[in-house]
Each structure stands twice: as structure tokens, then as C-alpha cells.
Image 1 (cartoon, one colour):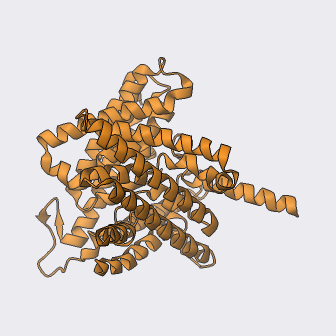
Image 2 (spheres, one colour):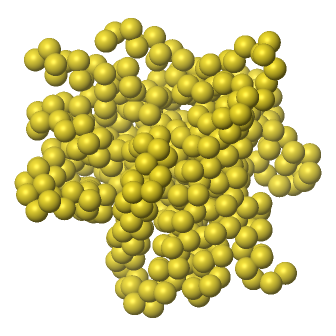
Image 3 (cartoon, chains in turn green, cyan):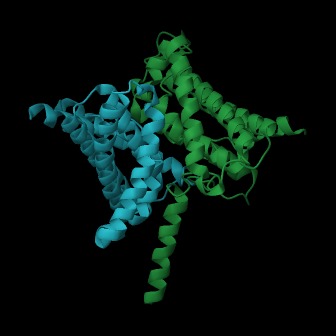
Amino acid sequence: MNKPVERLYNGIVKENPVFVMMLGMCPTLAVTSSAINGAGMGLTTTVVLTLSNMMIAALRKLIPNRVRIPAFIVVVATFVTLVQMLLQAYIPSLNKSLGIYIPLIVVNCIILGRAEAYASKNKVIPSMFDGLGMGLGFTIALTLIGLFREILGNGTAFNVTVMPKVYEPITIFVLAPGAFFVLAFLVAIQNKIRNRKAVNVKLVTSCDAGCAGCASAGICGGHEKQIDGEAVLKEQKQE
Amino acid sequence: MKELFLVAVGAALVNNVVLSQFLGLCPFLGVSKKVKTAAGMGGAVIFVITVSSAVTWLINHFVLETLSVTYMQTIVFILVIAALVQFVEMFLKKYSQGLYQALGVYLPLITTNCAVLGVAISNASDGYGFVTALVSGFATAVGFTISIVILAGIREKIEYNDIPASFQGMPIVLVTAGLMAIAFYGFAGLI
């Protein structure tokens, strides 16, 4: 498989940021009340991710190692601001429904994670495809969650009524709790498939798989494990 | 005074930052295995969000609005927050060992907590005054602490339960969070 295709496959299937790596949870749950919002958020993130990956890959030899994280943040924040202005100008309806979550793309750990794990070590073109693949993987996941929530909670898909008239929409699915439930079930289904496929593959919990690359590795499970580990060590010492 | 109280209750309970606005989910799901660590994280978040909502308000009002470059908000706020967290960490290390030991480990992790940036941006877009912004920041962080401590308490109990294999780990935590979100809807009647 040649490189661009491999990067796309990697982002969409093998290391899907939402279902496999559990990154970028905030927008995943917050803006997926309908399929269109999910797709809009996904595509906005894809644009930022692709551009910032390209920029960081181009600058990778100029950025000193010690200040790389702040430098990445500035690059990402610049592109987010640009994209926000473009949305305000050309798609105001999407801008309104995504609201505060557009500026918050800056702290989406998928973007910093890819910058750190891939773009800072690779050439511009592969980095572009890496960003594109990850972004599309994110878009697909968000659209899927949005679709589920919209069908169950509103009886429509992409604003078109799909459920029969007798169907009473379960409103809670478009509200906040529904987001948690839908994601819980999707992850559970995925665990089921994974467990059946390969007994040896260990269950992916929190962000085991993506921790190395995630800028906020500390926040997720890794940090907890570290604290747990320290506590265990202390206990052992006391004994 | 009454208005401030309403802002505080609204930010802490009715529009709970995690359960209804989905900000700060990473630490909410990641650092909630034990009540003790959850409370530590909550304390650090209260501290940082309160300080950062004051500082970002001042910068937004006196620098960005004076120069009419409010479109720079996102870039400036995230850099200010990152620098602020570093500064707070250094300051605590030097002058308050007790507080540093209690909150120290959690501080570097807070930069990427989207609740901090979220509060700063929504304070700016709601056009709050200085005191209101401060109260709203503090109350939002208190809401975060309440929900993360409750979730940690439930997770400690869940450990002893017999959960279907597919639901172990993240799914059951998400279901728990969903049930908590339903419970928090009860607060909607308060305002």
C-alpha cells in the first residue's frame, strides 16, 4: 500500500480517533445532537488538522524542541481563528450551532496529538494525508453518533424524516444524557467485536492506545496509572 | 447581589460544565477513579479557573478591546492560560509548599482542560463585568468539582459490581455519567 492510502486507512479505521483512541471527547459528545452538526464539526476539525499538520511538518526543522508544544498551539490557534472567521462569513448557521466549540478546537487533543506524534517527524505530504485521514475518521465517527442520536431522539436523519409516524421520538437522546448513552453503547459494541476477533488483544480503555502521542496524555488514564502506581509503591514500602 | 447568585447557581448546577456543556471531559473521565484524586483535581481546577477568568477578563477588556483585535481572543487566551498555569505552579512551589503538594501534580494537566478556555471565551462572549466573570468562573469550577467527586464516588462502588465484559471500562463510566446528567436536569427548575 502506498503511503497516502496507508495514512488515510490508518486514520479512518485502524487508529480511529474517537472509537479506538478515545480522543477529542468534548466535541464528540457536545455537538452530535444531529448528524449535520456532527459532520460540520468533523469537517471543520479536518480542515484545521490538515492545515496545521502541513504547517508543523514544514516548520519541523525550525521549531526548537524545547518550545515545540507552545509553538504547535500557536499554529493550531491561528488556523482555528481563520476557520472561525470563514465560517462566520460563509456558513453563519453552522457557526451559530457549533458556537463555543469552534474556538475550543484548539484544545482538541487529536490535533496536538497528531502534531506531536506524526507531523513533527514527517514530511509535508504524508503529514497532510495523516491529518486528512484522522480528520475523516473523526468526521465519520461524529456523523455516526449524530445520526444515531437524531434518529432516536428526533425521528429524522439529516433533517429528513425517516421514522414512521407512529414512532414517538425519545427526546432524551438529543439532550445531554443521550450523548453519554449512545457513545457508551457504541464503545461497548466495539469492545464486543474486538474481543471476539482477537482474544489476545487487550481491551482498549480510556486512551491506552493513543497516550504516547496525545498532548494531554497526563490527563487521561496515563496520569491516573502513574498516581496509582505511586500509591502502590508507597504501600509496598510501608509494608 | 441577586443577579450574582443566579449566575453562580446557573453555572454550577443548572448548566453544569461537564454534564450539560461537555467541557473538561478528559479529566472528568480520566482522573475519576478515586475520590481523593478527583477532589485534588477539582481543587486545582477551582484555583486555575478562578484566577484565569480574572486575568483573561482584564486582558480582554484592557488590551484586546482597546486595540480592537478581539479576533485574537483564542490565540491570546490559550497562551495566557498556559503561561498562567506555569506561573501559578512556580509561585506555589516557592511560597506555599502545602498547597503545592496538594495541587502540584494536577496543575500541568489543566492547560489542556477545555473548561478553562471555555469559561474564558464564554465570559467574553456573554459580556460579563469583572465581578460577574469572576463569580461565574468560580461557580463553573465548583460545578466541575461536584460532578467529578460524585462520579469518583460511584466508580469506587462500581468496582465491586458484576459488569458485562463489553461494558467494562469506559462504557459503564459513560452510562454512569449519562445517569448523572439526567439527575442534574432536576436542577433546571431552580432558576
